[in-house]
Image (tube, rainbow, N blue to C red; front, top):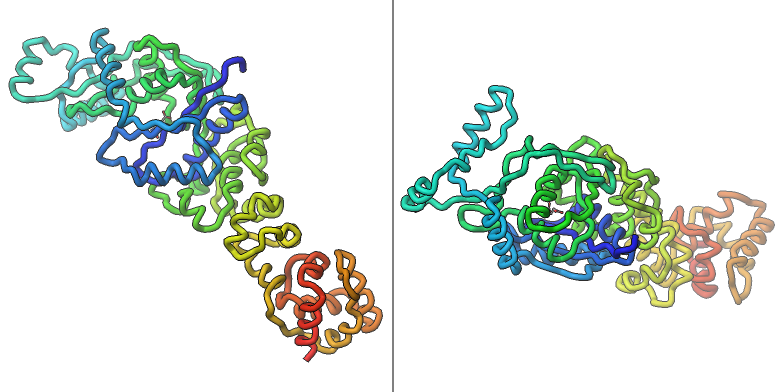
Length: 448
Ligand code: GLU
């Protein structure tokens, strides 16, 4: 790609973003990163009544947690002058026309068309209003809303995911761009910004395919070359239900609070519904090297939120210490505890689980065992320091020879004595971390 892509993620700050929004954000971000381009975070906040600063701030935090770092941040609420200029351009070109029908009237017309098995498309009656007619409405104090006059034809594009795609705009109602109170709906600000910001690639969910046909006409009406478009499949739950902001449990904020790793959330949200298996990754760059837009499948991306548990565990099992050191230190783990991390990560489902193993390694607790005799017999066989990963096998060989026990009967009582747990990380790794003095104390305590 000669030209560096400029992409945007354009959430409306009217709720928390969820794992399906993460999919859109990440496809954009990974595409920009892969080609050395720019990722713009654009808040589509023209709906003043529903957009809040709190939601916008929460979105920024959620994206940051995922590892998505915008190169530029914009708010549509601060850019209205641009939209006014674009609206004027359309009006001057005769492509924006005033309408007065009420929602009830429009609904009535739609119902009548449907009853006659006709598509419920706006009848363009407002185009026939004479200048006198407009003056009368104005005299009554009625304010119009404004529709964009579509050029009825087939609009085609080569979609980055779906290939050749086309929509017949004759099957669409002329979209309302401006409400009667003068505020803008999503369409015109979006295209105006896409032009102004030099967006080269619009990557978004396939629920926007029809919008794309309208927007391509708007780009052209505003004298701009349309960008490339790519529409990814949408995430659906096993029940077939789509995701919405109502599904709070799949919001990024909730997943973070529940202790999931951002890499696991990113891998699941991106890799389901593609030609790749859902595999753990250690970073977004790792994800970036695996996936391209053309790998996204054309059918819905069914996913089971329960998959996140297993994927989270498999992610922890491969995460390097550097990725978790800060959060481990919050749990009380020393900053130089890399050996500890490497010893325990394979046993974790959530990072929080590391806390109990840190207790085992660094705490002063002693435990009991189910074979006090064996534990007592083991004590004289404890090797002298220095200890390494061979120590456990030297120790258990000697204890096995002295007791005649092997397998579970040998290892299980010793594991209980040393960790207080039935299962856990390999003792050959834990033993040197616990250290001889404490191991001795635990064996003595569990031998009584
Ligand atoms: N604010 C729009 C949405 O959240 C943006 C869609 C787009 O990417 O153009 O659906």
